[in-house]
Length: 374
Image (tube, rainbow, N blue to C red; front, top):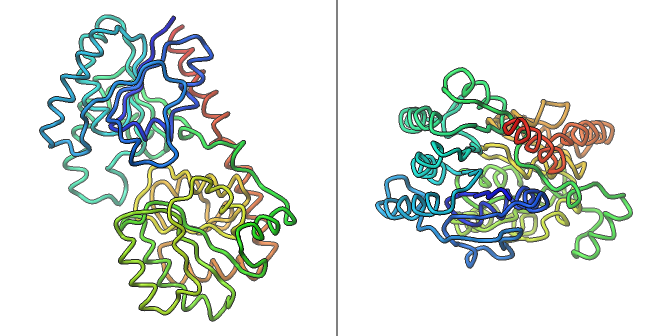
């Protein structure tokens, strides 16, 4: 029986992205382990599944936090004791400390895989990101057997610059059995359950309320949008540090009747299906789940320009992508007014998103694992 260890800075990362892979390993008869900081008490609705053993490691997100010295020692002791066949590490801190702690294990045959969920350095990233993170990732790429990238931009860079075997996957997968299109009749029924008018034109934005997700940009558009779409509603799903600032902005602009902060929604798929359009104004993204979820639900996306959005959206084909406020506004209005355009984008996006489903990405991962063991 192979022993597999998944490492991330926090348990919630594993719960959000890797449970289908742990399930796949379990179904193949593997013994599955997880190591990370147990933060699940802070995360409503998340729990570890398909895991034989979970080890609480005192990771901290900042690479400069001295508590990571203790975390490194804990992790190294675990790896040297348990003799894992495969170690899959994630997140910047978890990935670096795991590769450091696995030096002896690799010499003894353990295969170490690092999944980069989006490098902090990319086209358009701040110069300080390149100065700090690029040398780190380049150095530690040599400390693993395979580096998995989830965007083509990261794959091209790593393949050219890093001395390791680089693999491209279409993300870690979105659950196509959870996110799927429904009929117009089902949509109206769902809206009734949620207490929403069937006449409203609903724009949904999901994600943590913070400066990077940039919900402020969307709220600023609402007064002008109401002139063209009187029945427009903007839903913001998520919690975060910007909540109070956004509430003040909504009050200041006088759009309380049009903007709703939904908070954290464990069944976000219901809100995607009940919406008409999905919006995102993030300044940076790796490979955003919310965009793929919208595509799989046949909800057109209007997005800002960043690496993750560029990966998924071809302008006016699989969605809209722009950083210009006037064009962003015009794209939303176009989807409201032009039903043929709406339908074409929704259909194109749905087809494109099939490569990003869990079913597809698990097949990619299993092919890569099988090749590794040939």
